[in-house]
Length: 234
Image (cartoon, rainbow, N blue to C red):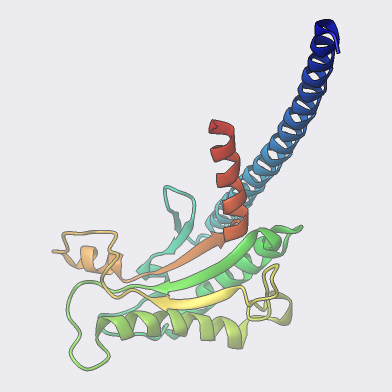
């Protein structure tokens, strides 16, 4: 075999190897683009969920305002806070007084209406009815933790017992067919006013928060996102 034949054979091998490498690079690029599209889709879904949550909370606050019921929205648009003057919890008390029940029911009705619109519920994971207390210690075994939880339970039971069938909240389920609402108590650990001195300070911390959490990617979805970044950096 002549030298030119050897060089020709080597050239052919080099060309074939180059073609194989180019094909492999094209496949890798295509795979990375696909993962990037999946990543962008997941980000878009999160943004949509955040937008739906923001719409629900602000729409509820506006409708309640129109009814003369003043609630507040947290700065990060995740919590609808019901002040104590609407529910009337006295120090150490966990029951909603008769004079406050009609207003409490209106809040439940408005929440039901705004959540049920369109397909908003598909973007939600859990809605927490959260009870809070001021920082004055409550004697007895129950303490402030129990008191705050009982306040949230009191509101939830009122909704459960007295809301009309079309406004019932206890049957609402998220996209995973899990019950949407949950009840919790935080005692004095999440005050809206840290330095509690006056009666107004204490009263401000005796409240109910309605916290909306949205659906988020699973651990597998997060892993795919991480893989995209790792492979993209290589």
